[in-house]
Image 1 (tube, protein in one colour):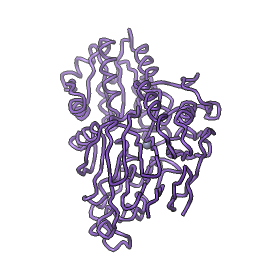
Image 2 (image 1 turned 90 degrees about the vertical axis):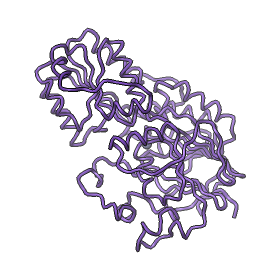
Image 3 (image 1 turned 120 degrees about the vertical axis):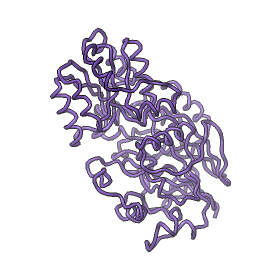
Image 4 (image 1 turned 135 degrees about the horizontal axis):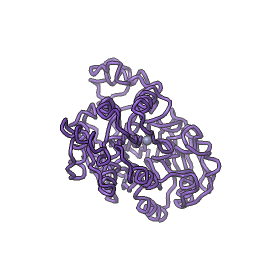
Length: 441
Ligand SMILES: [Zn+2]
């Protein structure tokens, strides 16, 4: 039967995305990540992962959804489920970016299934694995922006997205009877906002039947302002919104002419921020030191050599703290004790711990307080990494798809209304996409 069938395995109620689009015997799976739930995560580093049972364990605790035909017979053991070997679909998996809620489970897929990641994403994946910051690894194929690929009768074109993770992509999928755009994670207030907006000009020209869009900031619990006040379409940053540039400006103004040390904590997967911190160091006439893992990632991703902190530097920094800016990860927070007694400013730039309200967040705050340093944080992770509601509304209006499905949000019903009809697909059902309408089958 040649119809375009969509299945939203995960992502219609929150983070962690797994969506399939099938046409005939061809199937594209968009992202393959576990839900992001920092307060109830079982794989928290304490519980031992049983590698020999990794697929069946992940299926039974719901870490991965039951997608038929993607797990090998060997991994499924006695788990009663259609294996890769027994399935007649030709499957390819496309990953929008390297954040865990989009790709953490790809190591569980049968090795024969091709997984595609943007060329910069693959570089990051390899660098993270090399440094031990990515636990598991599987081989992947690369793609470039705007380069069309053909999987059977399905044509897929990746587009740039200005999410903080390198190689972030959205995907335009065309079957003989439907056109779908999956946005991946998006925002329009990063350092490449103009490029992100220009993608909308390209998408506007396509006759898109269904837009599957990242709507994270429609949830009041995740947006740092009141989303309802920001839900009318506008390209601009409204009062209260924080841009990435605003953050660098704040760091610059608080460190300029300041006698103490500057310390920042950022996420190893968001490498463009590392580059900007190096530039900021130059402007402030401060040497920027990175931990060895971050230095390695910077070298691999951007060809930049940066100094790594050693014992001799610590003495020097204590003598002249105003000449230094240090990257520090939460796992190495005790290294800050070396600077006890000197003044400091600590900037939480969305590194681990990622969100407020977790135990580790409180520990981080305690350490900074004991050092008598000033703690700076900005909006929150969700607002920093995802489109503000007014820009999301602008995007939806501009693309002008016949219909829309909000994903990556706990409250998809809060999606700003538009000319696109909103559908709320159930996660356990197939849906037929015909003439821009999604119908459960
Ligand atoms: Zn995400």
